[in-house]
Length: 442
Image (tube, rainbow, N blue to C red; front, side):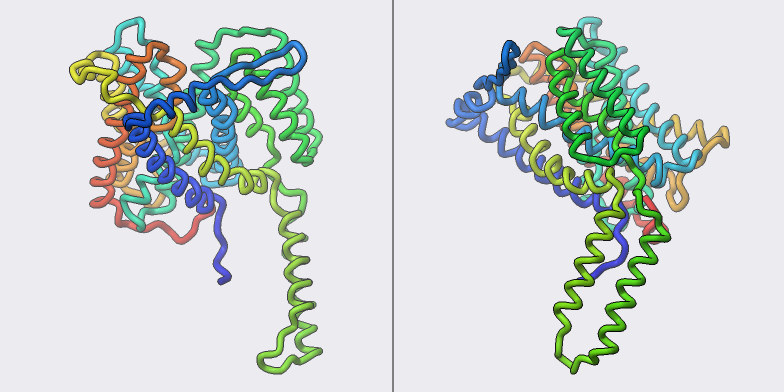
């Protein structure tokens, strides 16, 4: 059945919500698997090394590490492209809307980090990226569970805010804590990114070339000791966002094809029930070819890679890194400064930071909350941003090397995500009934 215009964010949201739900189911299955009598097979699967060598270069890492270093960059590529689209041509292209979302993202990073740093000992302070990030997939999935009548502007605003926090915490943590292992590899990665920038400046739209160079940049970063997710973010920055085909030319060509099809029907005058299959399919094929040419490279690449990121990369990461053994910790240890710092920073720091910064910004008059939203909806959405889940877990894998401490941080992330989700959905179930204007360009 043919439908109305579906905007980019709506498609992005639908796939990410399904992927987030699938990831949650896989996480629960993985937790049950590790703590079952067959738990040894889980350990064997993800801790078994996989080696790739070429000439004198050799990379040997556990399979779980390959999932983290190779597949998760795909998630950051998708998030980076979506943020670029929203900032350049979407809802946040207006200055006031961008400033409002940026203030929310900054508040949702700074206040949780301040709470975390205040509570934890100096030895654990490098773990602040765990509470600075946010998981857009988890937030959108919880929004879908909360209500099906939430304003589209609220969902787009929270998605953009979560993506800003996720990308911002990743880049800051890599700049501050990465120890370069191979300067030559880092130089190659930097040179490849420079070449990508040049291709973008020359308006090159050969997507296989961008992807090939992006893969070279990814491998170079891995050899240099930099997280592969950085390559995903940098590649997203250079993907062309505008189409070569002008809007007027696309509309004119579409009208011409439809006019030709209508003229053929008038000339042949088919009887009721008689089909013009050959003419009809020829017109559809032409329209499809024109649509493919008219799609921007960013939109086309995002459509192709989004299902892989949502249905493969995130669930596999959850399968490899979410589980923990029930007998690997003592319950009293969850009251320690590090797990409590993570928990309180996510549950309390996130909503306090988001609401405080946007409220102060509104007082200055520089920017105001998006039209069609009220403070009750923003409060519920700010609570949901505490559901760090996969991206917080990713940061925890980098920050905490001691397995016992990592397990406690994992449990704090899960507990905070669950509690933030429950509180946010309760608030939105009461305050989230107001509907938005129909189908804004987000």
